[in-house]
Image: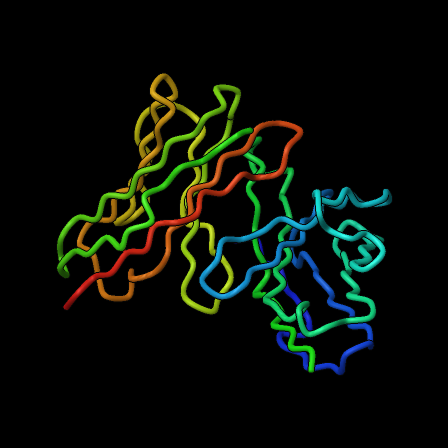
Length: 118
Length: 110
């Protein structure tokens, strides 16, 4: 099956610093990748959609200058949380869509990155 | 506003029973339908996809789709304690991101 990796799996950083999270599709090319955030016992929240080689589309209420997304290749997208604050502490999960999955556009999730800002 | 509705549960079933999870969606233009399983503290895992009306079986899992009723369901036969998780229904339409329901928590007791 399609595999999406994410690195790091967890990170602790000090308030005011920046953190970069990498998302890779390992065995398929992902023209579209998605970034989600999930707080404890809450639903997945889509933050942004990124297409390879173009600017990300952010959901309403998500600060694009704070959450920088780069989709440099068909297998790699990065999310940088800039000037992190404790309220940014959350579980960040990337997802990649396999456009070749028989027309169904199945979407696979990475294992997630747990960010704690102190 | 496109919506995907699920009963939050918890749905409790004994080991060996059939668990039935239901989902309705609002947009008739929806084309693809997915079920994800999410264990606590983990990311969602795709377990079933279905694109046309009828049933699709994969091992102990059966997905059922009725586009006229805008309804999709997931049946888990011979439920095991390891099936205890939150099950997310997701719906896709061309040009959009997946729309997720809030999930149904399933608890299988041994």
